[in-house]
Structures are given as C-alpha cells and as structure tokens.
Length: 270
Ligand code: DGL
Image (cartoon, rainbow, N blue to C red; front, side, top):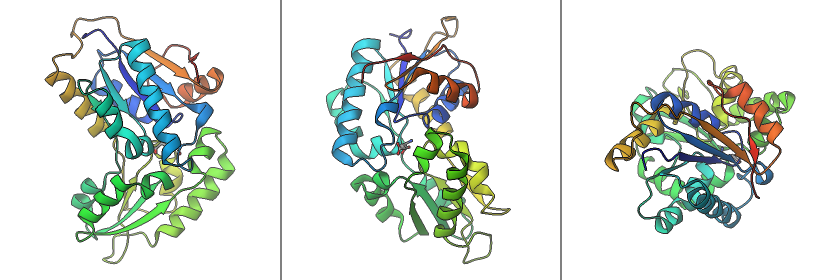
C-alpha cells in the first residue's frame, strides 16, 4: 500500500499549484494527477454536474490506479461533492480544499478580507456555513470570479489582466488602514498562478493566502495515521499526469508551472 500513488485532481491545471506543495512536503510519494480539462471550468457548471464528475474521477483513480489517498485539489469540487466521495470510500483518506477564511481571520489586522473564488464555491452550502461561522469576526468581500479559471486554462494574458483588474476593483479598497482590505484569500487553486497580476491591484502590505502548504501537511498526517507513508528508501518516485483534454496542453502547463518535472501527460477517458 505504501508504494501506491496519491491521487490528485482538479478541473484543469489549477491543482498543479497543490501538486507542487504536495511534492515539496512528500518527496518520496508517487502521485497521479488528473486534469478534467475536457469539462473545465467547473465554477459555472452547476453543482449536479460537478458532483457527477467528481465521483466519476474518484472511482476511476481508485479502480485504475489503486490510489491510497485522494486530494481533491479543487475548491469547487470539494464544496459540491467531498462528502459523497467520503461516503463512497469510507476507508480512503480524502483531503479537500476550502477557501482559507479561518487563517485569514487570524492573520488580518484590519479584519477586512477579500475572498476570490468560483461562483460554484461561493454559492455552495458548505461555503455558506463556513462564512456564517466567521461572519462576526471579520468583513468578508466575496467575489465570484466568472471566467478567470477559463482564462488561466487558455493562458489568455489579456483576459487574465482584464479580469484581475475587474475583480480586485469589485472587492473594495486595499491597504492597511482600518477600513481597508489587508488580506486576500485565493479560494480557487488556479489563482496562485496569477497572484502577481492580482497583487498589482492591491499595493504593498496586502497578504495573499492559498491552501497548498496546509493541504500537503494534512495529507502527510492522514498518510501517517493510515501507516501508508512511502518508505524513506523508496526510489520509485514518479508523478503521472493524465487529462480528459489534450495532453499537449497539460504538458505545456506542467512545463510552465510545475516546480519539478513530471512524466509526459497521457490522455485518459472522459
Ligand atoms: N481550480 C478549481 C477550484 O479550486 C476550479 C476552477 C474551475 O474549474 O472553475 O475551484
């Protein structure tokens, strides 16, 4: 079991930001990453569709790759369906992602926080509960970023620049004065890749938070608890990339964004 891979998936390339953190935290593990590019983006597809895709991908990763743990490296898929994945595989360690509202509350000095995420995430019951549980501790400016994940998927620089300007403007005023937003939660795994573009609209002193590192730590904890951490001596280190879309597109994204190289992506069933 220790030699089995950890499954990681996202609607597309966003989860590569989480994969980077996982590989840094767990250098002896094997990973299989699935990008559901043929169906991306998830953010504006509606909960039923995202639920159906999430379950189908989880089943495929378990049955074809015999994964020992699953990281749902997508806030939108986590919000829609992680409870159903857990119900389907009660013995499989499953790690999900949610926008980092709690860390933001403890880090923010002004208690004014912007949350950038997909419409699907912000509309979900899971997110609404999280937001309600913290609403008396900070002001949250919730910004559904329609089109932004799609622009990142297609590396459309002009669209990325335009949407970053629009959504940061919609969030409110940034800065470290009492009424200003000093903390931005990147609530979609695609957004760390365009953090520099977003930062241009925030100015100095504003903090950006993503969840890659804590998710990698949680994955380590769950593997340790299940006694399935890869052997320190295991030299069978590999990361496999698969996509329901065009393998060349995922190869280009991996070459651009993965901090360590991986095997050439392969096409997988839609
Ligand atoms: N990267 C995903 C997330 O974290 C989904 C983006 C999308 O497909 O719309 O929410």
